[in-house]
Length: 357
Image 1 (cartoon, rainbow, N blue to C red):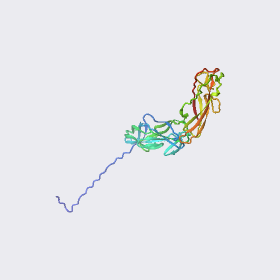
Image 2: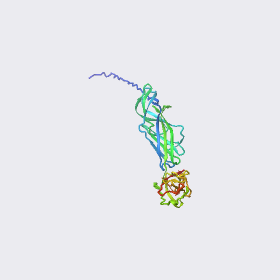
Image 3: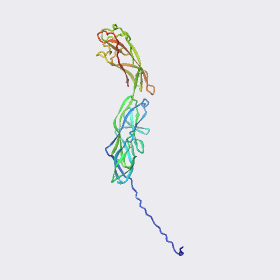
Image 4: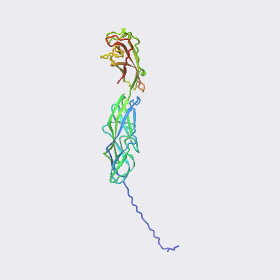
């Protein structure tokens, strides 16, 4: 125990602690691809239904290219020995594409008079994003460090997958070709402010879109015409003379799908001709041919001659179904200047349904 003088003044010592903080700024800079601009190909091979083909419909096509990635080098303009863990991705739409409208957060561009086209691409860490967009942070799968202003072998995962969007402006049938075209260019920086002029990759869209139309005759069954037994004496010795008394008239049913209200039906007849002028179907009896007539009793060319069809039901359903009939007649005829020898004869032909737009 110590005894202090009552007049002793205690001495207080104050210590000041000075800490020096070093703040390290994140680097800034831009990136370039290691092996030239990387091409992401979005190839469309799409078949639309009648519902998809209605005016105002939007159709989404998945372009999943899985884990597409490529390497690049980033140049650190500041923070030449600092690290970064994101690249910032910017997409710019090809200026040759004409913007049309925006629907449901998708920006559309003119493809042709029937379709507009839109694009979303996948940004790792962000998700699917509509182009164009500006400086979105892309997860690059780790931390990269600048060494004397250069960071090599940065991995980029963006742009390899996405969605193509089609907007129907006018109904169509058949196939529309999407010519190979750059739809978006992609740029990368290591900070959210630097503007880069170096394209690291692009998205190239190409392919086709089809609205198929199908027709069937008599539910797909073969059309059989049996002339029964004919006496050889019924044939004339004049080539091209038909046995009119044996003429048979048939009406067949037509059913077509994916039809538009303005579409019309017709048919063409194709067969091997018995004569050079294609007025008769050839048979396996060289002296016998078969004449074909339209519904007005006019002879037709058997190598591409046209037959009229009558529409009995217009497409009033969403399935675009059209019903119709086709009427034609056939009669055996003399293919040579001789009456035929006794025996059976057979011939074949093809009816092709033609759809007019």
